[in-house]
Image (cartoon, helix red, strand yellow):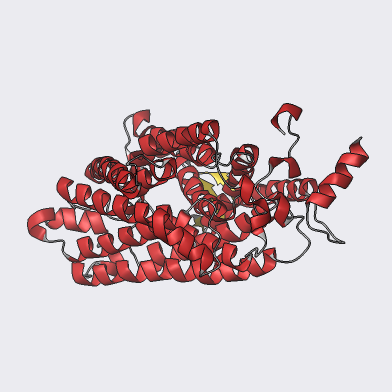
Length: 457
């Protein structure tokens, strides 16, 4: 029976002479991680047993000053978004729920390990001993890094093998670490919630890969691309988790105090605003005035994406509502008009509609961030507040807000460029006939890679 099943799965995958197996990739990768972590990764001063000595040296009076107590609640929320929010959001396909939530689990666990190393080499390498010192903030940033790859996965959902997803994540994390370093360190742009660094990059990375991997005969599995009642309900669970925790996502690594507080308020309001406009446009777009669950699952989150860059800026509460209002409209119209146009004309098969939820709102967020930064003034921020918000210190101590706005805009272009160029290169690698991806007629079907109970078939 085992041999018969393996033969059947080979027929369901594309016919190739060489196939790289998932168990081999998982074992080799995990062994490599154990070796690399042993060589490079150490606890930072706030998670090491020498914390007591560090407290005494820095004159810290209580353990409550440890970064753990500031960051861990946000880490919990972000972690839930990565594994539960993104995972369940991808369960909308009628026969691909296992693949949606299961492969999300796989590549997230795979990616966070590589992200700790890549981001560590760029941001946290101790020049004294050449070790990477990690704490709770590193875990948050690793989750952020993986989020960009999960976004890219959304464009390829149901059309790629788990090994292809791991390759996508391997290169995606690497590209993310480089573009993050350029945008945040070299350009000194601010992007607390990742509209540019996470969403824009991840979306264009995934869309370009999907374009390279275009399947002209995907219509053979068209009957599996839709949803059913219960799959939409499960996907809505993911939406609600993402919607509730998005204020934590945008504020998790913001400055302690007013910046983090402001990021929560701005994101909270933008999300609420995008919900109302999404419901309105969805209803208007249907002849009978009914709502489309695809819009409600996705476009209601656009406000959180668009508020990422400017979340800790003084954009004002009503400004946050405007951002959510506009992004909800743009995202919903994207599902109505741009998704079919992109598939028919541009040959981009975007399974989850990440162009509408992440790419366009991410670009909006980058533009809003640039405008808000360029229009900042001492009368609004105060002199110390302006320096603290934009980190006008050391090498950029003399930077003006107008120049900062220009660098914010440059950061957006860097994110798009890395997504497009990186996606084209990685897509070419994924196009090689060695990854065991499903045949056109078997896309969007869990039965290719999962043991599925008989009554579900």
